[in-house]
Image (cartoon, rainbow, N blue to C red; front, side, top):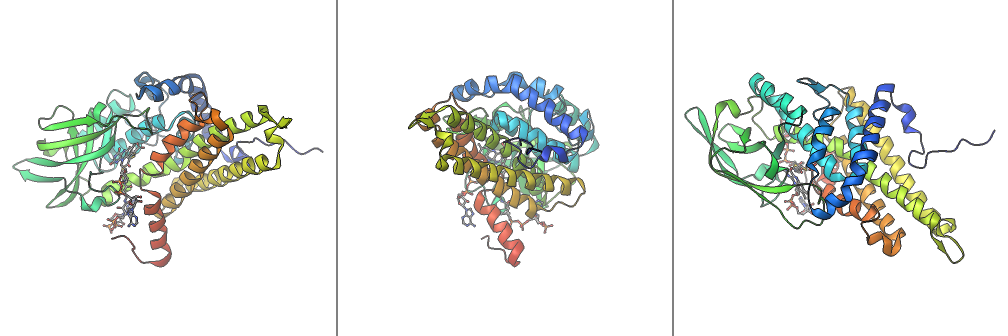
Length: 390
Ligand code: TGC
Ligand code: FAD
């Protein structure tokens, strides 16, 4: 019996480990990405704009807050959320970012720490894509160390007054509501700041060379008065925002696999078509080693993500395990994108092919949600028991 032909983008047949429902989620989102997302993304990236026309379609597919039960959300498991991120990021990291922020960084904290009124008001609207959210944690003086935030809130009767600034906030200029983290006398609290609250302003960060199909901005708080009803009542420590990061990092560990698959696919096609020195360059030993190495890294990332997802769905996931996967999979995807760019030679710098766009995007993805160094030090602390931060 001849050997079964393997899928070059799934050498270990990870797909066969998915349940029927999970495979259906993957295929549905995959079709959406092929039909609707990929045709738009090159131009969106070149225009430095997020394709807002996709928001309604993403909502109709149930991709916002997909892990939440109720509130018009899909109530899918963690593996399905991972697969959603993977398929979306095969299109572009900007769209996956949009869904990560809305789902993991805005709907998750409202669901986990919000009041019933906050949940009723925001979650269904966000699930339908009628309200857009953003997450303000990073500040201009140093995002890796959010415990050193300067933004603060003081009680004034029943209200809170927020002063400070946030930087590099995905969707800030287009968001209806921002979950903003600020220091208070009672610990770090989350505030739902609405776009028209007096004293609140945003400014778009122009001229990015990465994540161009995503809107990024700064936030400014000048005596912004927020009613008690807009404070998340369920958390008063840094654990609040850091727990949101665990959710988003989990999605990123899956998402970047999609970007890497898109790059390997392009490198495979190109190197098989490109005839150099009398034969397709894919027939040379040197090229096959490079392609094999990409497949090795993708396979490792896929197995890691699936194991992580199964742990999440059993309620056994730890933040350090997420750090390891975020670090490994972002590093693998970025290296693959850079190598695919090179395999295409001069064509690799053209937007006609996907590697350069994914490569530039992944420079952000490896930095946000904790830089590579931050995740390495999290693992160092796990291994030694010694905190090397600070
Ligand atoms: P540390 O003392 O270690 O922890 C404070 C408390 O938080 C708990 N904790 C976590 N809980 C859940 N998930 C995590 N990942 C957690 N990490 C820590 C911890 O157990 C402790 O709880 P308790 O009860 O003992 O108080 O805090 P630290 O100040 O030493 O910080 C550690 C460090 C460096 C790992 C943390 O500050 C960090 O992760 N820094 C990186 C910051 C970061 O990733 N920022 C991302 C901003 S959002 C973003 O980038 C969005 S991009 C969105 C997109 O477009 O997709
Ligand atoms: P810094 O923290 O200043 O780090 C600078 C360098 O120092 C890095 O190389 C880092 O690894 C290194 N370093 C840090 N600590 C140590 C140490 N102990 N030892 C040795 N080296 C160290 N944030 C949000 O809150 N919400 C968002 O929606 C959001 N979206 C983003 C979108 C984009 C496109 C980008 C680029 C960023 C976004 N961020 C967001 C911010 C992101 O989380 C931060 O950029 C990231 O956490 C790093 O912070 P920083 O840029 O201030 O770098």
